[in-house]
Length: 119
Image: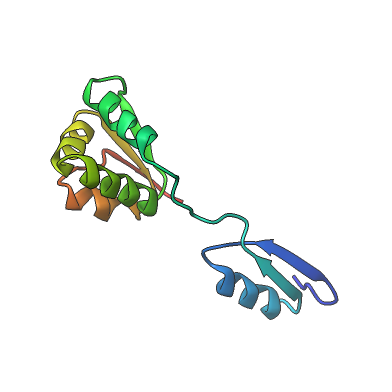
């Protein structure tokens, strides 16, 4: 396959350099721009409410998509309560993770993922 003579747009945030290198290897003119940016929300009311609902058994399963998101939730919890409250609530539900990145964050809280799905 060749991208010779083509201008290629890639909406990539995390692996922008690798994507640009791949496009150039295939002889394309690469334009790589971030499609999303992680940004903390103003206030933490929704995150705290989620943790409280998790504690009361409102959820049976939690899907962790990113390590950064889970670490943010843990850090928010730490500002408002003992992190063990979040950890204990997570231990009572089935945890599904997409890819390996949430696993170390869970491990830090002594929480195990029951299902790990590849990216």
